[in-house]
Image 1 (cartoon, helix red, strand yellow):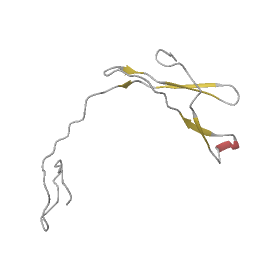
Image 2 (spheres, rainbow, N blue to C red):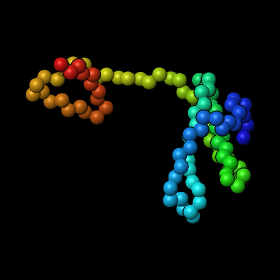
Image 3 (cartoon, helix red, strand yellow):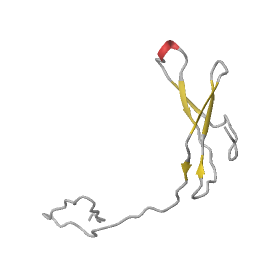
Image 4 (spheres, rainbow, N blue to C red):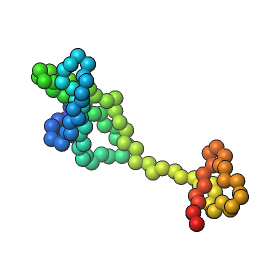
Amino acid sequence: GEDDIQPFLSAGIILIPEDNVHGGGLGGSGKARAILSLDCGVTYYLTVRAITGFGNILESYSDGILIDCTPPTVEITSVGIVAVGEDATLAPGENRYQLTP
């Protein structure tokens, strides 16, 4: 549980209550968002910490997320309008950019 980039925080967490929790206890889940400046080609490790109603601390951490800033490659194999009656079927791996009239 390091906090080199972002310290642990509780602000901005949106809790979602859950009904019918196994065992009859209180239940819920949530989500949070933190705006961070991440560098391309760097692997970041995430730690999530939760505190139960009894005060127990639960932690889970990732095995790393690599920030990939490589733009996607798009290959267009056909450009045009399919004429009425023409077969518009695409073969596997074939792409078509088409303007609809």
